[in-house]
Length: 473
Image (cartoon, rainbow, N blue to C red):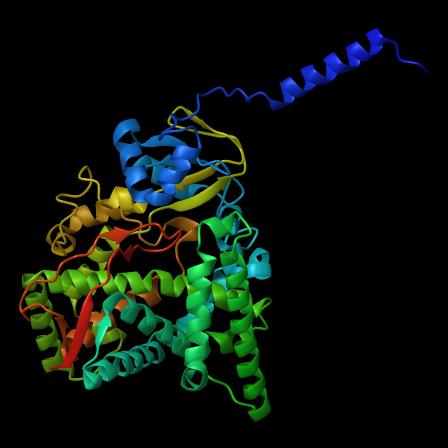
């Protein structure tokens, strides 16, 4: 059959009209959130977000309010803030707002091919095994591991008199601690340097923002690090099998329950347990050292604790230090995660604004936790706020205005481990060592570095590190 020119014209017109109808923006009953723009469309906002994501979010919040939109090229991000936003965000089911789907972009270079198994389909993160696996270790095993690693790290520094970058020291201490707690003492004593380097590389390259969307060198370096870590995990398991030996720790639990994708699950725990704990340890120690009055209260609490319990460091003893617990809460309030994400699996609406299916939705704990609307003098390190007004603390938590570990079905399964690690760390360090800032009088308050939120996930790192010397008391 021959098609006439008129026929061809009709076909072309039909295709054009179909394409226009298909590609035109979908209309929603509600309007889209206002878009915050910087400079050139898309490019300017994306570059500004890469340079200073915290500053960009803060400016957008101040100018546009608690609901706004960012066009980042590869993603459209809708940010919602405040108590109603947190209720909407944390109460949503995985079927409606998916943590698993949102996290895939951010975890692909950390978990590799095991990502789809570790990021469970129903719960967003297959976290039940973490709770089961860690529960037996809180009473004695984890405290003993924490004290052993702190003694090893800070004792060696005190004996050597070395001057060290403090954030890097905290970071490596937490990495070594995770090896001891999660892999086992045999691995820690034999392969800790190799395991630590692989874990550090996974976090450095796996969390590179550009590597999450493009095949840049960081993506291949992260894979190399995962392969190295897998090699040593396999080696450890083979050595245990040869000697019929078991070791307490999460690796043994995963082996005992015959976990699928054991390596991916271990990678995920390593990353989550390090990226936030290292930041918490650093920021808390620095802020306590920057405030002599807070440090005096910590030391007095430690003196009373030592008089009553001696050198005991376990869960029951650590429940007797309310001011120390308040310091932990104040640290994770001030230096919270920049954003938590979900992916809209349905068309949704919030406060009169449309959230189209496929949109990345985010809340920003750090913006809410530092908002004077909810916290008095939010930029002041004041642990007393958690002790002076118990009713307000309950209100903040029930209103989801204090969410350092998330909330609801996706609440962080490692919260108990993180709190135990931090309370024991601060108690042990201040009970046994003195931290001195290099080239400064011993009693001078420490400066507080500017937080750097450019890392895609986890707590902020310092823009500049502090050089420190450790001495025994």
